[in-house]
Length: 205
Length: 128
Image (cartoon, rainbow over all chains, first blue to last red; front, side, top):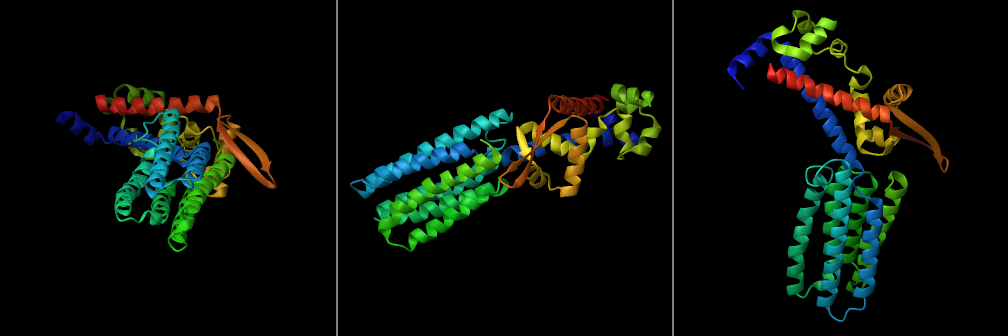
């Protein structure tokens, strides 16, 4: 930018205003598109798939011989689920002409990652402290927290699902530890499938 | 009118007539620039932009997304529908009426024109 040009425009006034208004309009369009995309970036089908993975994991985990195997099965399911979800979101972002981390998924991802990271640390702590039976409550609560905050701009069923996860997690802490696997199935399986179907029917895909 | 338009798109800073300063920041600018006024209005621009990303959105989705009131949204959506920019599909989901909007090819083209126009303005003022 050279100074004379700037002066000229300032003196005249009009082109500066025009430029600003055009920029403002473009920004508005961009923001609306992003919000519109993040509004439905969550995939109903994705939710159902994640739920089915969790139900499968619950079925296998219920037959596991040791707490370590139980944890391993669920961690495997979590990685598989998150990969599927990320791929589906990436596909939708791509359709909207946005990168995954600049577009629709960004806010959701950045809100979900911190509680998941906490969950990873606590998992190590709980396993070392022989507190594996307390993991379902911690996992459900932390995942729920991420979904509530990340889903605050998504369609209504998403934050509601997060709240339901938090309720289940709390319940898991105050009920017999033997129910832990059932709580996991109800949350990561049941809630995902339920919410997925609602989004699918109401908002498509 | 025509002179104004030419002056602006060609060389904004040097040739802008004083009359333009008078209408700065006001609606007549849209006309002066030969803009599609139908899309230029904020809420209508919002509707078209939102639909450009999503295949279809319900009345409720749009309302929540754009923070509009029922009356305002339906009036503006109607104008876009009348112009053929959006298509509206009314159906029933159980007993609840459901209104779904989609962007037509015409609407998509007009949004693209509008975007090109905005970019041209920015280019013109930058090069000035």
